[in-house]
Image 1 (cartoon, each protein chain N blue to C red):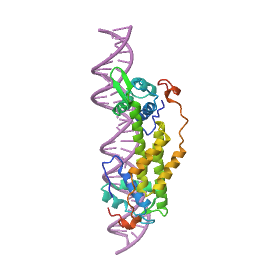
Image 2 (image 1 turned 45 degrees about the horizontal axis):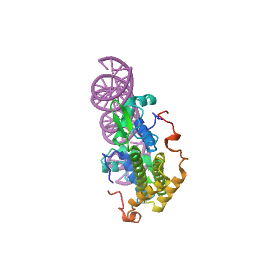
Image 3 (image 1 turned 30 degrees about the vertical axis):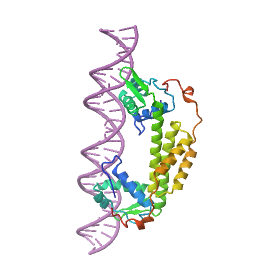
Image 4 (image 1 turned 45 degrees about the vertical axis):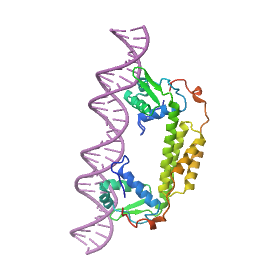
Length: 140
Length: 140
DNA sequence: TATGCTGTATTAGGTAGCTAGTGCAGTCAT
DNA sequence: ATGACTGCACTAGCTACCTAATACAGCATA
């Protein structure tokens, strides 16, 4: 898992995003154990508390659950809620963009055009199928 | 001009957004003087440096120009560049949203649908015509 | 029951960013 | 030239936030 300690976005948020994506796309399956706090901390060369903070936020969002002495696991409906959270986040960005456009009195047409152009410039990559094409465990 | 000192978004950014909007929508006309740093600072009950920081950023963006001893004025092509900056900002948000959707493997169709729904929920308000319908000077 | 794993809690250090205080410098009118 | 306005520059304090250090508590297995 790639983490940039010099990024302006905090490490714990980078971890959240990464795990969130893995759950949303089915790389991590329900009730499957995630890397332990210490293990991941060791891999990323950060303090365990930083990893814990990420996991706690993911637990608060209902994507994982933590059991003392046992580990961290993907919630049974983790994938569903992860996708739902993603949609929510997407809509939030779209809303911000639209509001910005509104306050500059950009026409409806202009907004649609800007969106379509942006969408066109960011083609979706060729899709593998779930985790079968990915690594089997927390490797990278 | 409304400014919330308790907001998580910095005061100087709130000022930037506000002025930016006024220029983009033509409320402030080219070469028209903006409120002086001290005057605006007095009105908003903040330190002059905070206002200055906002104005400096606006100058860097090419929306205004500052003349020592004279004041701050709207750049001649201010409205154009303001609208262009707005479009850029809008596209930035759209990009973020799209990227988020991509990383969750949301379908193209889903993205479009989310956008359209969001657009529908945020109707553009009935439009007045430029500044004639607004206040004539920096009043609020 | 002892060892080694797991998550949890509390505290403290460090840093980046925002805001404020104060003084300098240019322009114009009287 | 003096006063009153303008923008500019430097410094310092403060606050919020992230990260780290360290110690505590539960679970499983030999």
